[in-house]
Image 1 (tube, rainbow, N blue to C red):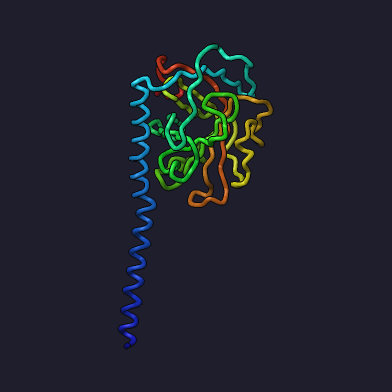
Image 2: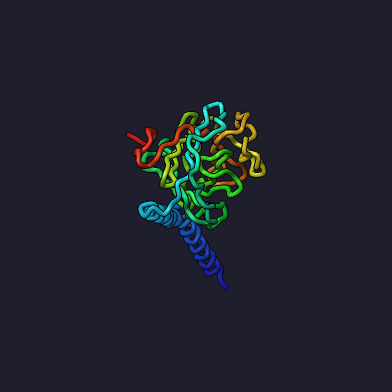
Length: 242
């Protein structure tokens, strides 16, 4: 085989490999995002359809925590039937974060398995329910699958994180973060999370995502307390009004 043939063969292989790499990057950066946006849109549509049919049980209203994290020991009402358990891999709430844009909204599903996080944000199944005593903790991808938490580092103290389960609006306010830690630091989702600044039981929210932007060697965390609740019939909470 001549040197010219060898060079031409190697060149063609390099072009082929380069094309495959470019296509893979396009797939990761663009196509998975397009598919994820469609899937997340479907999850939200499913929820809104269920809610429009009244297919959700009213939970007892939560008593909001104050900024120090303490709560009243009694609820504002009694006798309401608690909702049933969340279903693994299924959506149960929608999250809004105005700091990330007034069009930013993502479904929250039960569990943090890989396939679940491809459809939206994932609730750590061992943590508290939405609005209830304890630490309602949620994970999301920083990049790929719709990049839900791409702008996570922009979050600041005082920012609102608003969720609805179809019956109630829950407005949390961020107290600390983004805090950088390692994946093995699971205490960040404890009922009273370590290094959050909270010292007493309360109604908290923890958000987690990967760091750096295209890696997963570390985690970014923000912590928030439940600031207010209102029924959906009262309209959108102040944090979502423009």
